[in-house]
Amino acid sequence: MNRLIKAELIKIATKPRSYIGFIAVAAIVLLIEFAMYADGKEYLSFITQALEQTFIIEGDFLNGNLVCFIILQTLIIQMPLMVALVTGDLISGEMANGTIRLLVTRPFSRNQILTAKIIAGSIYTFLLLLWLGIFALVFGLLIFGDGDLTVIKSDALVIIQSGDTLWRFLLAFGVAFISLTVVSSFSLLLSCLTDNSIGPIITTMAVIILFTIIGTLQVPVFENIKMFLFTTHMIVWRNLFDNPLDLELMYTSLGIMVLYIIGFTAASYIIFNKKDILN
Amino acid sequence: MSEGNVISIKSLTKKYGDFAAVDSLSLQVGKGKIFGLLGHNGAGKSTTMRMLMSLIKPTEGKIEIFGSDPVRDHKIVYSKIGSIIERPDFYSWLSGLKNLELLAGLSQRKISRQKINETIDLVGLTGREKDLVSKYSHGMKQRLGLAQAVLHDPDLIILDEPTTGLDPQGIIDFRNLMIYFSKEQGKTILLSSHLLSEVEIIADDLCIIDKGKNIVQGSVKSLLSNESLVSQFKVDNIGLAKELLMDPKYQFTPFGESEFEILVSDIDIPPIIKLLVDRGVNIYEIVSKRKLEDFFLKMTTQG
Image 1 (cartoon, rainbow over the protein chains, first blue to last red):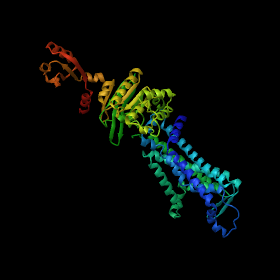
Image 2: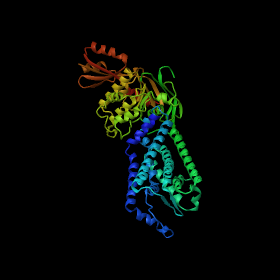
Image 3: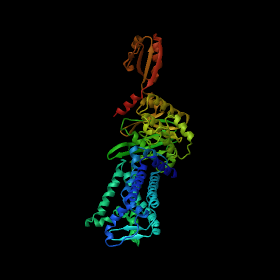
Image 4: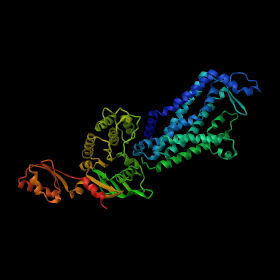
Protein backbone atom coordinates (compact mmCIF):
# COMPACT_ATOMS: atom_id res chain seq x y z
CA MET A 1 0.00 0.00 0.00
CA ASN A 2 2.84 2.40 0.88
CA ARG A 3 4.41 1.68 -2.51
CA LEU A 4 1.14 2.59 -4.23
CA ILE A 5 0.87 5.85 -2.28
CA LYS A 6 4.50 6.65 -3.08
CA ALA A 7 3.86 6.01 -6.80
CA GLU A 8 0.79 8.27 -6.72
CA LEU A 9 2.74 11.04 -5.01
CA ILE A 10 5.55 10.71 -7.56
CA LYS A 11 3.00 11.07 -10.37
CA ILE A 12 1.46 14.16 -8.76
CA ALA A 13 4.86 15.67 -7.99
CA THR A 14 6.20 15.17 -11.51
CA LYS A 15 3.09 16.40 -13.33
CA PRO A 16 3.37 20.08 -14.30
CA ARG A 17 -0.39 20.60 -13.73
CA SER A 18 0.09 19.97 -10.00
CA TYR A 19 2.05 23.21 -9.64
CA ILE A 20 -0.62 25.46 -11.15
CA GLY A 21 -2.37 25.61 -7.77
CA PHE A 22 0.80 26.50 -5.88
CA ILE A 23 1.78 29.17 -8.40
CA ALA A 24 -1.75 30.61 -8.46
CA VAL A 25 -2.00 30.73 -4.64
CA ALA A 26 1.38 32.41 -4.36
CA ALA A 27 0.51 34.91 -7.10
CA ILE A 28 -2.95 35.79 -5.73
CA VAL A 29 -1.78 36.09 -2.13
CA LEU A 30 1.27 38.17 -3.01
CA LEU A 31 -0.90 40.38 -5.24
CA ILE A 32 -3.37 41.00 -2.39
CA GLU A 33 -0.54 41.62 0.07
CA PHE A 34 1.08 44.07 -2.34
CA ALA A 35 -2.24 45.86 -2.89
CA MET A 36 -2.85 46.05 0.86
CA TYR A 37 0.69 47.27 1.42
CA ALA A 38 0.31 49.98 -1.20
CA ASP A 39 -3.27 51.14 -0.61
CA GLY A 40 -4.51 49.12 2.35
CA LYS A 41 -5.34 52.09 4.58
CA GLU A 42 -7.45 53.81 1.90
CA TYR A 43 -9.18 50.53 1.15
CA LEU A 44 -10.05 50.03 4.82
CA SER A 45 -11.19 53.59 5.30
CA PHE A 46 -13.56 53.10 2.36
CA ILE A 47 -14.99 49.97 4.00
CA THR A 48 -15.35 51.61 7.41
CA GLN A 49 -16.94 54.83 6.05
CA ALA A 50 -20.42 53.81 7.20
CA LEU A 51 -19.15 52.80 10.64
CA GLU A 52 -17.36 56.09 11.16
CA GLN A 53 -20.73 57.86 11.01
CA THR A 54 -21.74 56.03 14.19
CA PHE A 55 -18.42 55.23 15.90
CA ILE A 56 -15.14 57.00 16.46
CA ILE A 57 -12.51 54.65 15.11
CA GLU A 58 -8.95 55.04 16.38
CA GLY A 59 -5.83 53.03 15.67
CA ASP A 60 -4.74 50.92 12.71
CA PHE A 61 -6.97 48.08 11.42
CA LEU A 62 -4.41 46.93 8.91
CA ASN A 63 -2.28 44.06 10.19
CA GLY A 64 -1.25 40.52 9.24
CA ASN A 65 -4.33 38.94 10.82
CA LEU A 66 -6.74 41.08 8.81
CA VAL A 67 -4.82 40.52 5.58
CA CYS A 68 -4.91 36.75 6.16
CA PHE A 69 -8.66 36.91 6.83
CA ILE A 70 -9.26 38.89 3.61
CA ILE A 71 -7.15 36.40 1.62
CA LEU A 72 -9.08 33.43 3.00
CA GLN A 73 -12.37 35.06 1.99
CA THR A 74 -11.05 35.84 -1.49
CA LEU A 75 -9.77 32.31 -2.19
CA ILE A 76 -13.01 30.51 -1.35
CA ILE A 77 -13.79 29.98 -5.05
CA GLN A 78 -10.25 29.51 -6.35
CA MET A 79 -9.04 26.85 -3.93
CA PRO A 80 -11.64 24.20 -4.93
CA LEU A 81 -10.66 24.71 -8.58
CA MET A 82 -7.01 24.17 -7.77
CA VAL A 83 -7.79 21.03 -5.81
CA ALA A 84 -10.15 19.69 -8.51
CA LEU A 85 -7.42 20.22 -11.12
CA VAL A 86 -5.50 17.38 -9.51
CA THR A 87 -8.11 15.20 -7.79
CA GLY A 88 -10.56 15.32 -10.72
CA ASP A 89 -7.82 13.86 -12.89
CA LEU A 90 -6.75 11.02 -10.60
CA ILE A 91 -8.84 8.27 -12.23
CA SER A 92 -10.18 9.83 -15.43
CA GLY A 93 -6.72 11.08 -16.40
CA GLU A 94 -5.38 7.53 -16.16
CA MET A 95 -8.42 6.27 -18.08
CA ALA A 96 -7.94 8.84 -20.84
CA ASN A 97 -4.22 8.09 -21.13
CA GLY A 98 -4.69 4.32 -20.94
CA THR A 99 -2.26 4.13 -18.01
CA ILE A 100 -5.01 2.77 -15.75
CA ARG A 101 -4.17 -0.61 -17.29
CA LEU A 102 -0.66 -0.36 -15.87
CA LEU A 103 -2.14 0.00 -12.38
CA VAL A 104 -5.06 -2.42 -12.49
CA THR A 105 -2.92 -5.26 -13.86
CA ARG A 106 -0.49 -4.97 -10.91
CA PRO A 107 -0.92 -7.08 -7.77
CA PHE A 108 -3.12 -4.54 -6.02
CA SER A 109 -6.87 -4.58 -5.61
CA ARG A 110 -8.92 -1.73 -7.03
CA ASN A 111 -9.79 -0.72 -3.46
CA GLN A 112 -6.09 -0.34 -2.72
CA ILE A 113 -5.51 1.66 -5.90
CA LEU A 114 -8.37 4.03 -5.10
CA THR A 115 -7.34 4.35 -1.45
CA ALA A 116 -3.80 5.29 -2.51
CA LYS A 117 -5.20 7.92 -4.85
CA ILE A 118 -7.47 9.35 -2.12
CA ILE A 119 -4.56 9.55 0.33
CA ALA A 120 -2.28 11.14 -2.27
CA GLY A 121 -5.03 13.62 -3.20
CA SER A 122 -5.53 14.49 0.48
CA ILE A 123 -1.80 15.04 0.94
CA TYR A 124 -1.83 17.35 -2.07
CA THR A 125 -4.82 19.27 -0.63
CA PHE A 126 -3.07 19.56 2.74
CA LEU A 127 0.14 20.84 1.14
CA LEU A 128 -1.79 23.39 -0.90
CA LEU A 129 -3.47 24.68 2.26
CA LEU A 130 -0.14 24.73 4.08
CA TRP A 131 1.27 26.75 1.21
CA LEU A 132 -1.66 29.14 1.49
CA GLY A 133 -1.12 29.36 5.24
CA ILE A 134 2.55 30.20 4.85
CA PHE A 135 1.87 32.92 2.28
CA ALA A 136 -1.27 34.37 3.85
CA LEU A 137 -0.57 34.19 7.58
CA VAL A 138 3.20 33.96 7.95
CA PHE A 139 4.04 36.46 5.20
CA GLY A 140 1.07 38.61 6.31
CA LEU A 141 2.37 38.85 9.86
CA LEU A 142 5.94 39.44 8.65
CA ILE A 143 4.92 42.27 6.31
CA PHE A 144 2.07 43.91 8.24
CA GLY A 145 2.84 42.88 11.80
CA ASP A 146 0.59 41.48 14.50
CA GLY A 147 -2.54 43.18 15.85
CA ASP A 148 -6.17 42.77 16.80
CA LEU A 149 -8.34 41.28 14.07
CA THR A 150 -11.33 43.40 13.17
CA VAL A 151 -14.00 41.45 11.30
CA ILE A 152 -16.62 43.69 9.73
CA LYS A 153 -19.92 41.94 9.16
CA SER A 154 -23.15 43.27 7.72
CA ASP A 155 -24.76 43.48 11.13
CA ALA A 156 -21.84 43.47 13.55
CA LEU A 157 -18.25 44.40 14.21
CA VAL A 158 -16.16 41.69 15.84
CA ILE A 159 -12.80 42.55 17.36
CA ILE A 160 -10.58 39.62 18.28
CA GLN A 161 -7.49 40.23 20.44
CA SER A 162 -4.23 39.51 18.69
CA GLY A 163 -3.35 36.72 21.14
CA ASP A 164 -6.67 35.06 20.34
CA THR A 165 -6.28 34.76 16.58
CA LEU A 166 -3.69 32.05 15.93
CA TRP A 167 -5.81 29.10 17.13
CA ARG A 168 -8.75 30.45 15.15
CA PHE A 169 -6.68 30.58 11.97
CA LEU A 170 -5.30 27.10 12.58
CA LEU A 171 -8.83 25.76 13.09
CA ALA A 172 -10.01 27.72 10.06
CA PHE A 173 -7.36 25.98 7.95
CA GLY A 174 -8.49 22.65 9.45
CA VAL A 175 -12.11 23.36 8.52
CA ALA A 176 -10.98 24.52 5.08
CA PHE A 177 -9.19 21.18 4.69
CA ILE A 178 -12.45 19.34 5.38
CA SER A 179 -14.27 21.66 2.94
CA LEU A 180 -11.70 21.00 0.25
CA THR A 181 -11.86 17.27 0.97
CA VAL A 182 -15.58 17.46 0.11
CA VAL A 183 -14.56 19.00 -3.21
CA SER A 184 -11.79 16.46 -3.82
CA SER A 185 -14.06 13.50 -2.98
CA PHE A 186 -16.77 14.92 -5.27
CA SER A 187 -14.32 15.42 -8.14
CA LEU A 188 -12.89 11.93 -7.53
CA LEU A 189 -16.40 10.48 -7.82
CA LEU A 190 -16.88 12.30 -11.14
CA SER A 191 -13.42 11.07 -12.15
CA CYS A 192 -14.58 7.47 -11.60
CA LEU A 193 -17.67 8.06 -13.73
CA THR A 194 -15.97 9.28 -16.87
CA ASP A 195 -12.97 8.54 -19.07
CA ASN A 196 -12.57 12.21 -19.92
CA SER A 197 -9.76 14.02 -18.14
CA ILE A 198 -11.20 17.56 -18.16
CA GLY A 199 -14.87 16.70 -17.60
CA PRO A 200 -14.69 16.10 -13.82
CA ILE A 201 -12.74 19.32 -13.25
CA ILE A 202 -15.20 21.49 -15.18
CA THR A 203 -18.22 19.69 -13.71
CA THR A 204 -16.90 20.15 -10.17
CA MET A 205 -16.50 23.87 -10.69
CA ALA A 206 -19.88 24.16 -12.41
CA VAL A 207 -21.59 22.44 -9.46
CA ILE A 208 -19.77 24.63 -6.91
CA ILE A 209 -20.73 27.80 -8.79
CA LEU A 210 -24.34 26.63 -9.19
CA PHE A 211 -24.67 25.68 -5.51
CA THR A 212 -23.03 28.94 -4.45
CA ILE A 213 -25.51 30.94 -6.55
CA ILE A 214 -28.44 29.00 -5.09
CA GLY A 215 -27.01 29.60 -1.61
CA THR A 216 -26.67 33.32 -2.23
CA LEU A 217 -30.09 33.94 -3.77
CA GLN A 218 -32.64 35.01 -1.19
CA VAL A 219 -35.50 33.20 -2.89
CA PRO A 220 -38.00 31.27 -0.72
CA VAL A 221 -38.02 28.24 -3.03
CA PHE A 222 -34.29 27.67 -2.38
CA GLU A 223 -34.39 28.21 1.36
CA ASN A 224 -35.27 24.59 2.16
CA ILE A 225 -32.51 23.09 0.03
CA LYS A 226 -29.67 25.39 1.07
CA MET A 227 -29.07 23.27 4.13
CA PHE A 228 -28.31 20.25 1.92
CA LEU A 229 -25.83 21.94 -0.42
CA PHE A 230 -22.25 21.25 0.58
CA THR A 231 -21.20 24.73 -0.51
CA THR A 232 -23.40 26.17 2.26
CA HIS A 233 -21.20 24.48 4.83
CA MET A 234 -17.85 25.09 3.13
CA ILE A 235 -17.81 28.67 4.42
CA VAL A 236 -18.37 27.66 8.02
CA TRP A 237 -14.72 28.51 8.82
CA ARG A 238 -15.85 32.17 8.96
CA ASN A 239 -17.84 31.36 12.10
CA LEU A 240 -14.57 30.70 13.88
CA PHE A 241 -14.11 34.47 13.89
CA ASP A 242 -17.35 35.10 15.78
CA ASN A 243 -17.57 35.94 19.44
CA PRO A 244 -18.97 33.83 21.01
CA LEU A 245 -18.57 30.78 18.78
CA ASP A 246 -21.73 29.11 17.54
CA LEU A 247 -20.52 25.57 18.22
CA GLU A 248 -23.81 23.92 17.27
CA LEU A 249 -23.68 25.48 13.82
CA MET A 250 -20.03 24.48 13.47
CA TYR A 251 -20.66 20.85 14.43
CA THR A 252 -23.72 20.60 12.17
CA SER A 253 -21.82 21.91 9.18
CA LEU A 254 -18.79 19.74 9.87
CA GLY A 255 -21.04 16.70 10.30
CA ILE A 256 -22.82 17.36 7.00
CA MET A 257 -19.49 17.82 5.20
CA VAL A 258 -18.14 14.57 6.67
CA LEU A 259 -21.32 12.80 5.52
CA TYR A 260 -20.76 14.18 2.03
CA ILE A 261 -17.16 12.94 2.05
CA ILE A 262 -18.26 9.46 3.17
CA GLY A 263 -21.05 9.37 0.58
CA PHE A 264 -18.90 10.54 -2.34
CA THR A 265 -16.03 8.25 -1.36
CA ALA A 266 -18.24 5.17 -0.90
CA ALA A 267 -19.85 5.80 -4.29
CA SER A 268 -16.36 6.13 -5.82
CA TYR A 269 -15.32 2.73 -4.44
CA ILE A 270 -18.47 1.05 -5.76
CA ILE A 271 -18.20 2.60 -9.22
CA PHE A 272 -14.46 2.05 -9.59
CA ASN A 273 -14.78 -1.60 -8.56
CA LYS A 274 -17.54 -2.23 -11.08
CA LYS A 275 -15.97 -0.25 -13.87
CA ASP A 276 -14.97 -2.07 -17.05
CA ILE A 277 -11.72 -0.69 -18.42
CA LEU A 278 -12.32 -0.65 -22.14
CA ASN A 279 -10.00 2.02 -23.54
CA MET B 1 -7.64 -27.08 -13.90
CA SER B 2 -5.78 -29.98 -15.46
CA GLU B 3 -2.15 -30.58 -14.53
CA GLY B 4 0.29 -28.34 -16.38
CA ASN B 5 -2.15 -25.66 -17.45
CA VAL B 6 -1.25 -22.13 -16.48
CA ILE B 7 -4.49 -20.67 -17.80
CA SER B 8 -7.81 -22.46 -17.85
CA ILE B 9 -10.90 -20.72 -19.17
CA LYS B 10 -14.28 -22.39 -19.00
CA SER B 11 -17.47 -21.17 -20.68
CA LEU B 12 -16.31 -17.57 -20.52
CA THR B 13 -18.89 -15.08 -21.76
CA LYS B 14 -18.89 -11.30 -21.98
CA LYS B 15 -22.05 -9.60 -23.12
CA TYR B 16 -22.70 -5.95 -23.90
CA GLY B 17 -26.47 -5.82 -23.97
CA ASP B 18 -27.53 -8.61 -26.31
CA PHE B 19 -24.17 -8.70 -28.09
CA ALA B 20 -21.80 -11.43 -26.93
CA ALA B 21 -18.21 -10.24 -27.46
CA VAL B 22 -17.03 -13.55 -26.02
CA ASP B 23 -19.43 -16.49 -26.14
CA SER B 24 -18.89 -19.57 -23.95
CA LEU B 25 -15.17 -19.63 -24.68
CA SER B 26 -13.12 -22.44 -23.19
CA LEU B 27 -9.39 -22.89 -23.62
CA GLN B 28 -6.27 -24.02 -21.81
CA VAL B 29 -2.74 -22.70 -21.98
CA GLY B 30 -0.03 -25.17 -21.03
CA LYS B 31 2.95 -24.33 -18.83
CA GLY B 32 6.02 -23.14 -20.69
CA LYS B 33 4.20 -22.85 -24.01
CA ILE B 34 3.88 -19.98 -26.42
CA PHE B 35 0.16 -19.86 -27.09
CA GLY B 36 -1.22 -17.89 -30.02
CA LEU B 37 -4.73 -16.49 -29.80
CA LEU B 38 -5.93 -15.77 -33.31
CA GLY B 39 -9.05 -14.21 -34.73
CA HIS B 40 -10.33 -11.46 -36.98
CA ASN B 41 -10.82 -7.92 -35.67
CA GLY B 42 -13.68 -8.02 -33.19
CA ALA B 43 -13.42 -11.78 -32.75
CA GLY B 44 -13.07 -11.37 -28.99
CA LYS B 45 -9.28 -11.71 -28.49
CA SER B 46 -8.77 -8.43 -26.64
CA THR B 47 -11.96 -8.90 -24.62
CA THR B 48 -10.71 -12.31 -23.52
CA MET B 49 -7.34 -10.87 -22.54
CA ARG B 50 -8.98 -8.00 -20.67
CA MET B 51 -11.02 -10.50 -18.68
CA LEU B 52 -7.86 -12.49 -17.93
CA MET B 53 -6.26 -9.31 -16.58
CA SER B 54 -9.38 -8.27 -14.60
CA LEU B 55 -9.78 -5.12 -16.66
CA ILE B 56 -13.35 -6.14 -17.43
CA LYS B 57 -15.63 -8.50 -15.60
CA PRO B 58 -17.00 -11.63 -17.26
CA THR B 59 -20.75 -11.95 -17.61
CA GLU B 60 -20.45 -15.69 -17.05
CA GLY B 61 -17.81 -18.39 -16.90
CA LYS B 62 -14.72 -19.22 -14.94
CA ILE B 63 -11.08 -18.21 -15.21
CA GLU B 64 -8.23 -19.93 -13.42
CA ILE B 65 -4.65 -18.72 -13.61
CA PHE B 66 -1.96 -20.78 -11.86
CA GLY B 67 -4.88 -22.80 -10.49
CA SER B 68 -6.33 -19.78 -8.66
CA ASP B 69 -9.23 -17.45 -9.16
CA PRO B 70 -7.59 -14.19 -10.26
CA VAL B 71 -10.30 -12.09 -8.60
CA ARG B 72 -10.08 -13.85 -5.25
CA ASP B 73 -6.29 -14.28 -5.27
CA HIS B 74 -5.57 -11.05 -7.13
CA LYS B 75 -2.29 -10.26 -5.40
CA ILE B 76 -0.75 -13.71 -5.80
CA VAL B 77 -1.89 -14.24 -9.38
CA TYR B 78 -0.98 -10.82 -10.81
CA SER B 79 2.41 -10.71 -9.12
CA LYS B 80 3.34 -13.54 -11.52
CA ILE B 81 1.96 -11.98 -14.71
CA GLY B 82 3.35 -9.36 -17.05
CA SER B 83 1.15 -7.94 -19.76
CA ILE B 84 0.60 -5.53 -22.60
CA ILE B 85 -3.08 -5.14 -23.32
CA GLU B 86 -3.95 -3.43 -26.61
CA ARG B 87 -1.47 -0.54 -26.83
CA PRO B 88 1.38 0.26 -24.47
CA ASP B 89 0.52 3.51 -22.67
CA PHE B 90 2.80 5.24 -20.21
CA TYR B 91 3.08 8.44 -18.20
CA SER B 92 4.07 10.68 -21.08
CA TRP B 93 5.63 13.42 -18.93
CA LEU B 94 8.15 10.91 -17.52
CA SER B 95 11.11 9.28 -19.26
CA GLY B 96 11.05 5.61 -20.18
CA LEU B 97 13.46 4.95 -17.32
CA LYS B 98 11.32 6.83 -14.77
CA ASN B 99 8.26 4.92 -15.94
CA LEU B 100 10.05 1.64 -15.37
CA GLU B 101 11.33 2.78 -11.97
CA LEU B 102 7.80 3.78 -10.98
CA LEU B 103 6.39 0.42 -12.08
CA ALA B 104 9.29 -1.47 -10.50
CA GLY B 105 8.24 0.11 -7.22
CA LEU B 106 4.84 -1.56 -7.60
CA SER B 107 6.30 -5.04 -7.93
CA GLN B 108 6.03 -7.59 -5.13
CA ARG B 109 9.74 -8.31 -5.44
CA LYS B 110 12.57 -5.83 -5.18
CA ILE B 111 13.86 -4.83 -8.57
CA SER B 112 17.37 -3.40 -8.67
CA ARG B 113 18.56 -0.58 -10.88
CA GLN B 114 20.82 -3.11 -12.57
CA LYS B 115 17.82 -5.28 -13.43
CA ILE B 116 16.04 -2.25 -14.91
CA ASN B 117 19.09 -1.44 -17.03
CA GLU B 118 19.38 -5.06 -18.17
CA THR B 119 15.72 -5.08 -19.18
CA ILE B 120 16.13 -1.82 -21.09
CA ASP B 121 19.07 -3.38 -22.87
CA LEU B 122 17.12 -6.58 -23.54
CA VAL B 123 14.35 -4.75 -25.38
CA GLY B 124 16.78 -2.53 -27.28
CA LEU B 125 16.04 0.84 -25.68
CA THR B 126 19.52 1.56 -24.38
CA GLY B 127 20.47 5.15 -25.13
CA ARG B 128 16.85 6.32 -25.34
CA GLU B 129 15.72 5.40 -21.83
CA LYS B 130 16.11 8.94 -20.51
CA ASP B 131 13.99 10.49 -23.25
CA LEU B 132 10.44 11.49 -22.38
CA VAL B 133 7.90 8.86 -23.40
CA SER B 134 6.01 11.61 -25.25
CA LYS B 135 8.91 11.62 -27.71
CA TYR B 136 8.84 7.85 -28.27
CA SER B 137 7.64 6.31 -31.52
CA HIS B 138 4.97 3.62 -31.33
CA GLY B 139 7.63 0.96 -31.85
CA MET B 140 9.67 2.32 -28.92
CA LYS B 141 6.56 2.31 -26.74
CA GLN B 142 6.02 -1.33 -27.70
CA ARG B 143 9.58 -2.09 -26.59
CA LEU B 144 9.02 -0.19 -23.34
CA GLY B 145 5.74 -2.08 -22.95
CA LEU B 146 7.58 -5.36 -23.24
CA ALA B 147 10.17 -4.10 -20.74
CA GLN B 148 7.52 -3.32 -18.11
CA ALA B 149 5.86 -6.66 -18.79
CA VAL B 150 9.00 -8.70 -18.07
CA LEU B 151 10.71 -6.40 -15.56
CA HIS B 152 9.48 -8.34 -12.51
CA ASP B 153 10.42 -11.70 -14.04
CA PRO B 154 6.85 -13.02 -14.38
CA ASP B 155 5.97 -16.67 -15.02
CA LEU B 156 3.22 -15.73 -17.46
CA ILE B 157 3.37 -13.04 -20.13
CA ILE B 158 0.15 -11.90 -21.79
CA LEU B 159 0.63 -9.81 -24.93
CA ASP B 160 -2.15 -8.35 -27.03
CA GLU B 161 -0.97 -7.52 -30.54
CA PRO B 162 2.61 -6.92 -29.37
CA THR B 163 4.13 -6.49 -32.82
CA THR B 164 1.77 -3.75 -33.96
CA GLY B 165 3.84 -0.76 -35.07
CA LEU B 166 7.17 -2.59 -34.97
CA ASP B 167 9.49 -2.36 -37.96
CA PRO B 168 10.84 -5.58 -39.53
CA GLN B 169 13.91 -5.54 -37.27
CA GLY B 170 11.64 -4.98 -34.29
CA ILE B 171 9.50 -7.95 -35.27
CA ILE B 172 12.57 -10.17 -35.57
CA ASP B 173 13.87 -8.91 -32.19
CA PHE B 174 10.47 -9.55 -30.65
CA ARG B 175 10.33 -13.06 -32.09
CA ASN B 176 13.78 -13.87 -30.69
CA LEU B 177 12.81 -12.48 -27.29
CA MET B 178 9.66 -14.59 -27.14
CA ILE B 179 11.63 -17.71 -28.01
CA TYR B 180 14.25 -16.73 -25.39
CA PHE B 181 11.64 -16.18 -22.67
CA SER B 182 9.86 -19.43 -23.49
CA LYS B 183 12.68 -21.83 -24.26
CA GLU B 184 15.46 -20.39 -22.07
CA GLN B 185 13.47 -19.10 -19.12
CA GLY B 186 10.48 -21.45 -19.21
CA LYS B 187 7.93 -18.66 -19.19
CA THR B 188 4.43 -19.20 -20.51
CA ILE B 189 3.38 -16.71 -23.16
CA LEU B 190 -0.13 -15.97 -24.37
CA LEU B 191 -0.17 -13.66 -27.35
CA SER B 192 -2.60 -12.47 -29.92
CA SER B 193 -1.37 -11.23 -33.24
CA HIS B 194 -2.47 -10.39 -36.73
CA LEU B 195 0.89 -11.56 -38.03
CA LEU B 196 -0.03 -15.18 -38.61
CA SER B 197 3.37 -16.01 -40.06
CA GLU B 198 4.97 -14.87 -36.81
CA VAL B 199 2.58 -16.94 -34.72
CA GLU B 200 3.26 -19.92 -36.95
CA ILE B 201 7.00 -19.56 -36.33
CA ILE B 202 7.01 -19.04 -32.58
CA ALA B 203 3.79 -20.54 -31.17
CA ASP B 204 3.59 -24.07 -29.79
CA ASP B 205 -0.18 -24.03 -29.45
CA LEU B 206 -2.92 -21.88 -30.85
CA CYS B 207 -6.58 -21.19 -30.59
CA ILE B 208 -8.67 -19.57 -33.29
CA ILE B 209 -11.69 -17.68 -32.09
CA ASP B 210 -14.42 -16.25 -34.21
CA LYS B 211 -17.43 -14.26 -33.03
CA GLY B 212 -16.31 -14.92 -29.49
CA LYS B 213 -16.30 -18.70 -29.86
CA ASN B 214 -13.45 -21.18 -29.83
CA ILE B 215 -13.29 -22.57 -33.37
CA VAL B 216 -10.27 -24.78 -32.91
CA GLN B 217 -7.47 -25.28 -30.40
CA GLY B 218 -4.39 -27.48 -30.42
CA SER B 219 -0.69 -27.58 -31.10
CA VAL B 220 0.41 -25.76 -34.21
CA LYS B 221 2.13 -28.90 -35.40
CA SER B 222 -0.90 -31.15 -35.08
CA LEU B 223 -3.37 -28.61 -36.43
CA LEU B 224 -1.31 -27.99 -39.53
CA SER B 225 -0.11 -31.56 -40.07
CA ASN B 226 -3.12 -32.40 -42.20
CA GLU B 227 -2.82 -29.19 -44.11
CA SER B 228 -1.07 -29.04 -47.46
CA LEU B 229 2.46 -27.77 -47.52
CA VAL B 230 3.47 -25.10 -49.96
CA SER B 231 6.72 -26.43 -51.40
CA GLN B 232 8.98 -24.36 -53.57
CA PHE B 233 11.37 -26.28 -55.83
CA LYS B 234 14.39 -25.01 -57.73
CA VAL B 235 15.21 -27.39 -60.57
CA ASP B 236 17.18 -27.52 -63.85
CA ASN B 237 14.26 -28.60 -66.08
CA ILE B 238 11.03 -26.90 -65.17
CA GLY B 239 9.27 -28.10 -68.34
CA LEU B 240 9.78 -31.75 -67.52
CA ALA B 241 8.87 -31.13 -63.87
CA LYS B 242 5.59 -29.59 -64.99
CA GLU B 243 4.79 -32.65 -67.13
CA LEU B 244 5.51 -34.98 -64.22
CA LEU B 245 3.44 -32.96 -61.74
CA MET B 246 0.52 -32.10 -63.99
CA ASP B 247 -2.04 -33.62 -61.61
CA PRO B 248 -4.36 -30.67 -60.65
CA LYS B 249 -4.14 -31.58 -56.96
CA TYR B 250 -0.57 -30.21 -56.93
CA GLN B 251 -1.65 -26.78 -58.21
CA PHE B 252 1.67 -26.47 -60.06
CA THR B 253 2.66 -22.79 -60.23
CA PRO B 254 5.88 -21.90 -62.09
CA PHE B 255 7.79 -18.72 -61.39
CA GLY B 256 11.03 -17.65 -62.97
CA GLU B 257 12.90 -20.01 -65.28
CA SER B 258 13.76 -22.68 -62.77
CA GLU B 259 11.38 -22.46 -59.82
CA PHE B 260 7.88 -23.71 -59.16
CA GLU B 261 5.50 -24.09 -56.25
CA ILE B 262 3.18 -27.03 -55.51
CA LEU B 263 0.72 -27.95 -52.79
CA VAL B 264 1.49 -31.31 -51.19
CA SER B 265 1.01 -33.14 -47.93
CA ASP B 266 3.95 -34.26 -45.77
CA ILE B 267 3.96 -37.82 -47.00
CA ASP B 268 3.89 -36.86 -50.69
CA ILE B 269 7.22 -35.08 -50.66
CA PRO B 270 9.65 -38.07 -50.70
CA PRO B 271 7.93 -39.83 -53.67
CA ILE B 272 7.81 -36.53 -55.60
CA ILE B 273 11.55 -35.99 -55.06
CA LYS B 274 12.19 -39.60 -56.15
CA LEU B 275 9.99 -39.18 -59.23
CA LEU B 276 11.76 -36.01 -60.33
CA VAL B 277 15.25 -37.38 -59.71
CA ASP B 278 14.49 -40.72 -61.36
CA ARG B 279 13.28 -38.88 -64.47
CA GLY B 280 16.42 -36.78 -64.63
CA VAL B 281 15.25 -33.54 -63.07
CA ASN B 282 18.00 -32.21 -60.83
CA ILE B 283 16.75 -30.50 -57.66
CA TYR B 284 18.84 -27.65 -56.23
CA GLU B 285 16.58 -26.44 -53.46
CA ILE B 286 13.30 -27.30 -51.72
CA VAL B 287 11.61 -24.94 -49.28
CA SER B 288 8.42 -26.20 -47.66
CA LYS B 289 6.11 -24.28 -45.39
CA ARG B 290 2.67 -24.80 -44.04
CA LYS B 291 0.39 -21.86 -44.42
CA LEU B 292 -1.32 -20.87 -41.21
CA GLU B 293 -3.01 -18.12 -43.16
CA ASP B 294 -4.84 -20.65 -45.30
CA PHE B 295 -5.75 -22.71 -42.25
CA PHE B 296 -6.94 -19.60 -40.41
CA LEU B 297 -9.08 -18.44 -43.30
CA LYS B 298 -10.49 -21.91 -43.78
CA MET B 299 -11.44 -22.18 -40.11
CA THR B 300 -12.92 -18.71 -39.82
CA THR B 301 -14.95 -18.86 -43.01
CA GLN B 302 -16.50 -22.28 -42.35
CA GLY B 303 -20.11 -22.19 -41.26
